[in-house]
Length: 310
Image (cartoon, helix red, strand yellow):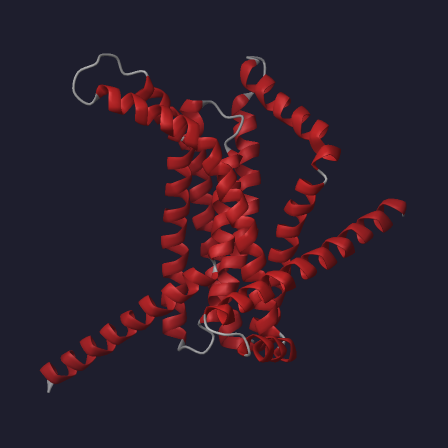
């Protein structure tokens, strides 16, 4: 009997772990937009930090990110246990925020000429701060870390909200397992990639300076030059991919949270042949994300103007 009970327990644990793994994979796909933006934002956070301080800054932000998730996961579990009706509204708010953030980036890019002087002044001030020994770089680092952790809290809240929505119908134990797994794995993955990205140019520079012509040295030098050239393009790609994914994920959340809209899009795309059906759904999500982002940005801008007048 004891052996049978033990085997039953092991089977239950295996089933639970299998459910957690499956739902974690689903949640990771749904949070792709936030992750792309998270990567780009955190890689940018170390701009203006000396090369030998980049990894310590990334590590400090990673610790803050884990603390953020240690607060958000229990809060998400409490909502799921006591007020599950809040999950859909929270998802809708998170989706709208994703669209807003994506459209704000897009609008800034469209009106780049209007912000060019401001961006150049900011970049120049960062360079001057690093080169000026009178500037307290420790205080500057602390400010950067605090700002990055605040930004991470918002992004982490979006990730947790989207993850909670993807496991809303599962038992509480499965929900907890998925939330904790997503929180830990994605934090390690994101900040591990951030660390690799910010040191990519340093690695390329070191490889490009290898002397001699024997063995693999010429190939290593060529690879180093490739890394140096690829680093800025990688940052641009991450920013672009993250923005597009934010519209896709945010738009998808809004579409699924509004049954009449979801039904209308399904009816239209169902008439499309083959692979156009899937493409049609993505285009619809992208369109909804763009419209929602524009509307939220317009509303936020209006409120800011009214507050400024008052």
